[in-house]
Length: 362
Image (cartoon, rainbow, N blue to C red; front, side, top):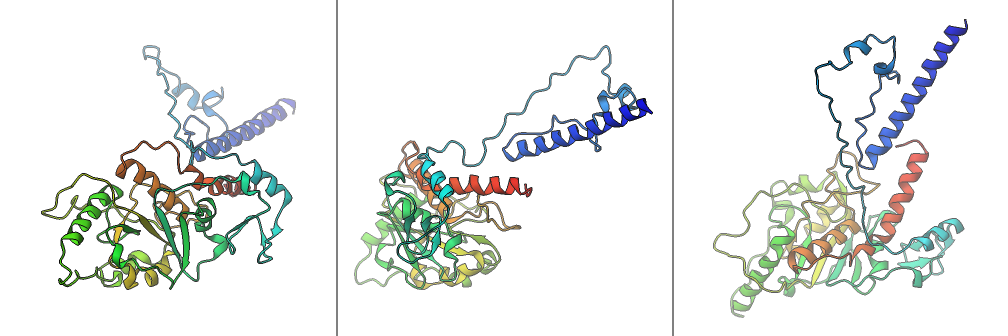
C-alpha cells in the first residue's frame, strides 16, 4: 500500500503543479507574455519527465542531433504601458476612504461627480491638469449613462479645453469647416495624417470662393450613405473607427500642400453605437471633415463582445487623436504631453482588472 500511496501522492502533486503552471501561463498571456514553454499533459503531469511514460523514450533527442536552443519570445508591452502619469497616491487614499457625497448634487461618488464635473474626496492640487493644443467638443447622447462614460475624464483633467454638450445641443460649425473636424468612422473619412492637407485645401477653396457664389452642397446624411446605418448599429464605443479605408491619399487633381495645420477644434461623439445615428445624421455636422483613428485598439473594460477592438472609449479616442496630431500633423516629437488624460482611466483599468482576477473572471 505504501508504494501505491506514494505514487498517488506523486500524481496529485503533478496535477497541482501543472495547474499552477497553466495558471501562470494564463496570467503571462494577459500581460503579453507567451506561455508556450509550459509543456504539460492535459492532466497536468509532465509526461516527458515521467520514467513510466510511453512518450519518454520517443521524446529523447537522437545522439547525432544537434541541441536545439529555445529562444524565449520577446514579451509584448502590456496595455497602457509606458505612459508618463502623475502619481496615483491621491486616488488610492480616496479609494480607502470610500464613496462620498457630492457637495453639489448629493450623489454618492468616488473620485469625481460625473453629473457635476467636479472632484469628490480628492484634492485638486494633487490631480494633474493638462493643457491641450486644440479645443475639444464632446457631444453626448442624452441616453448615455453618465456613470459609464469616460468623457468626464477629459473635462476634469483638461477643463479649459474640453466642453461637453448634451444632444440636441450642438455648436454651430458652419463657418469653420476648414478649422473643425469630426472624429467618426464611415465613408469619406480620412486618417489623421491626411487631415492637414484636406483642411488646407478647404481653406484655399473657401478663401477663393466669391461671396456671390452658392455654397457648396453639404455632405450626404450618414443614413443616405450605403452601409452607414449598418456600421453604426449594434456596437459600443465613444468616438471610434471601423474598417480601414483602402482608398487613395486624396482627391484627383489635388496635391498635398505643406504648411501649418489650420485645425482649431475637434468634435467627438459620446454614445453607444446603436444610438449614434441620431447624432451623426444631424445636418449641423454634415459639412465637417470626418477623421478616423485606424490603428488604435481599445483597453476599455466595458468593450462589447463581438465588436472590433478598434472601437475606442471616448477618452481613448481623445488621447490617441492628440498624440497622432502631435506627431503626424505638427511634426513634433511626442514626449508624453497628453498622457495624463489617461490618469483616471489607467487607475480604473488596473483596479477593475485586479477585481476581475480576484473574482476568478480572468
